[in-house]
Image 1 (tube, rainbow, N blue to C red):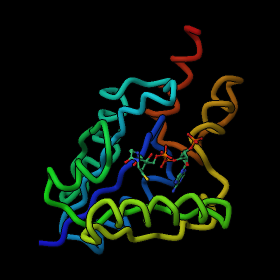
Image 2 (image 1 turned 120 degrees about the horizontal axis):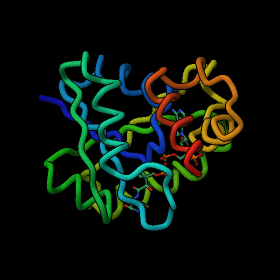
Image 3 (image 1 turned 90 degrees about the horizontal axis):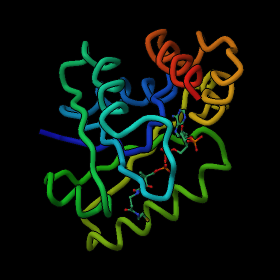
Length: 161
Ligand code: COA
């Protein structure tokens, strides 16, 4: 069985993320999408809310599961016994950061963990969770960027802010 971990903040998950998840699920036997409990960011949605959003969006993909983690990604990979990390590359601007992270993770894992990059589908190459949140704040149209239930959660969240 070839398994991979797709880590991220997913605050919230967008169609860009879902595109990577589906394509990874076509290649790997098992894909674990894992939400980072990131103390450096102030997320709009809690870890469990982000996990639930991902679970709902991927419920029809049998070889995808959703979890959360904190601490070093490499420790989580070791704990799960998974040695492939999946990441998406949207544009050249992502490349430097992603390259550095993949080199560091490889080094930290004694060259056991590799990162596989998917180029993001062109129509999602400009998409980010921050831009989606900004649009939601002003009640803009989110149809092209996130599933309807995620848009509703976003509008609801900003209504109470
Ligand atoms: N479609 C749409 N948006 C995408 C995307 C895609 N395919 N890929 C990335 N993005 C966006 C995200 O929406 C997010 O947008 P935002 O900045 O507006 O919120 C941004 O790109 C960053 O995405 P994310 O994938 O969540 O990365 P991250 O930088 O927050 O986290 C981790 C990356 C989780 C892999 C990394 O921080 C990590 O491993 N942390 C654990 C600590 C560790 O091990 N550190 C050592 C590593 S060297």
